[in-house]
Image: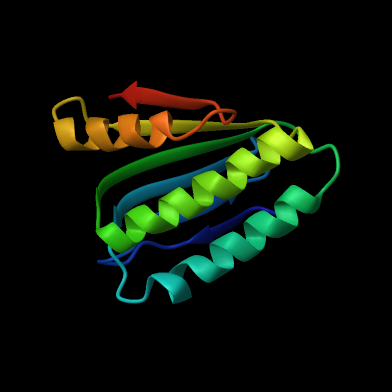
Length: 127
C-alpha cells in the first residue's frame, strides 16, 4: 500500500498514511457535515490494508483537538473494525490517543474508548 494524504479543511483533520513507517495519522478537528462521505475512503483504504498478508505493525496516532458526536461514532466504528482485525486475524495494530494534557475532555474520551477495547492496544499519550 502506498503513502497518501488527505489535507485538512475547517471541519476535517489532516489524515495520512506513511508507508515507510506504517503510520496512520489523524490530526486536527473533526466535525464534517457528512460523516459518511468523509469516512468512506478511510474505511475503504483500511479494509484493503487489513486484507494484505503479513503487514508489519500499523501504528495509528489520533490527535484530535475537537470532534463531534457523529465523528465519535465514526471513531467507535474504526476501533471496532481494528479490534476485530487484532482479535480474529492476529493483525498487529497500536492506537496512540494523543491529547493536550490541559484538555481533560480529550483525556476522558480517550479513556472511554480505551475501556471498550479488549484486544486492541490503545495508549493514552499526553503532550
